[in-house]
Amino acid sequence: MNLLLVNQQEIDDQGCVLLFDRRHQHIKTIHRLGKGDRLQVGVLNGLCGEAEIIEHQADATRIKLNLYRKPPAALPVTLLLALPRPRMLARSLEHLATLGVKKIILMQTARVEKSYWQSPELKPEKIHHHLILGLEQAKDTLLPEVTVKQLFKPFVEDELAALAANSRKLVAHPGNYPACPRGISEQLTLAIGPEGGFVDFEIQLLEAQGFQAVQMGERILRVETAVTALLARLF
Image 1 (cartoon, rainbow, N blue to C red):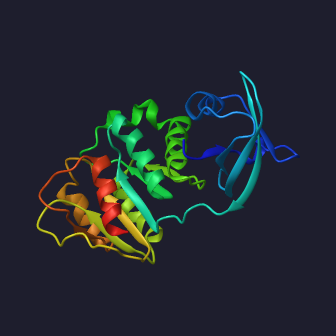
Image 2 (cartoon, rainbow, N blue to C red):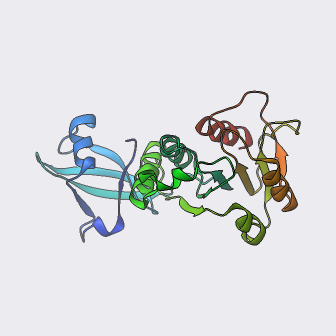
């Protein structure tokens, strides 16, 4: 936990927060801080700064906030991600939050097992938990937005044009395509398929919406590796 995140509603009239949960335990057992010590803090969807520990008991910690800086800049990207297998989804969400992706759309594609949609990892509280872990790692406060689209063709044909308007459109796909560009600065909509890739029909639908297929070489990457490698290369 590089940044302790608090919610605005937790802050009292004196600018203090009383912690009982895993954040208290982390301060106690991992950071091993006590009264008078300081740590990095941020308000969810708000400013960052420092907090001083003003009370530290066995079952609770009280901190006083001093907020004075903005969180890191977000990446200018909307990510369309074929729903990964549950264990990989959890790690991918944490990586994406850490890297600064703020708009994530999870999609059903032909090679996504429909059973994945029944996973507990898709419960809102689980998604929120993984996003928070990613934000804590990066010292960020801006919570990503995650939406789901379980019907690929209607989503691409009816919604994607408006969603991707005024952005560069790329789809990562293995094959004889141009190499993925490097160091772009424009707004981007990026589509990443499952480990088996998109099927030809899905690529055709995306290309009809103005998406350009690009590749990262001969190696087939796991989804969590692919998203990190692509974003690092693109930005």
